[in-house]
Length: 74
Image (cartoon, rainbow, N blue to C red; front, side, top):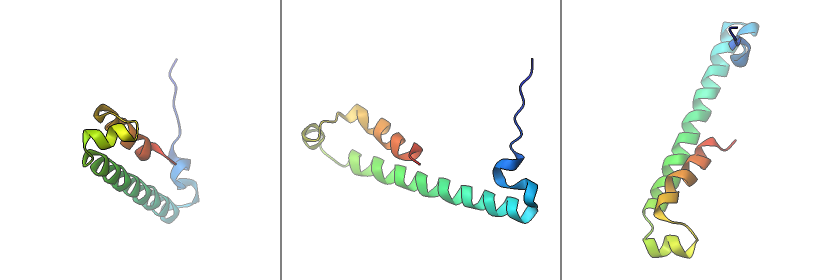
């Protein structure tokens, strides 16, 4: 059995094309801001020494996971 999802209402397509593009623009802007926050978190944590990371209870292998949490944060 096939499953379909109507995503047109997600960006306000039911309200008209201008509303759709405004919603799409807002979603893109928010995604760009989240990505910038991810990059900033990643760069700041990567700049720390292993000793500094250990002081805050992190290992170098945890950096990407923590930065990804910033990316996915609402």
